[in-house]
Image (cartoon, rainbow, N blue to C red; front, side, top):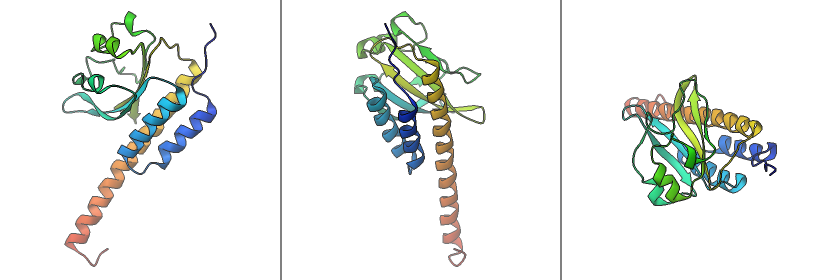
Length: 183
């Protein structure tokens, strides 16, 4: 059976434009997850950010998954799909044959047969993850994986930008409150 390429250069360009046109992390997350499901044709997509205190992945945005699956329980970094210390993606071609899932029964009930989890990292530190869920086994190609890894770099840069922009705005607001003539 011939593999159908789900992600190509034209689709990648559309997705990257969405990443760089977003005005805040929530909009970025919702636009990107909706677009990934529609353009790639997967069952669902989620973007998570790492909560370093709780050592959990917290959901930023998702599309295509049921409320029951989304609320299945905390996604613990050390028990969920392992985010490799060397920042490599985790590809589960068939969830029914994998021991890497924290909630295997929930995935089965949801109809999730494959998961591609790509760490979102910033300067070598994992700050989140992009996960794509498919309703059938998916053997992702090297080219598709390369596009997704580049995409997560863009997501990481955007999240960093939003954080810095927020700090700058907060500083400006504080300075304006303290010394209104400065700004």
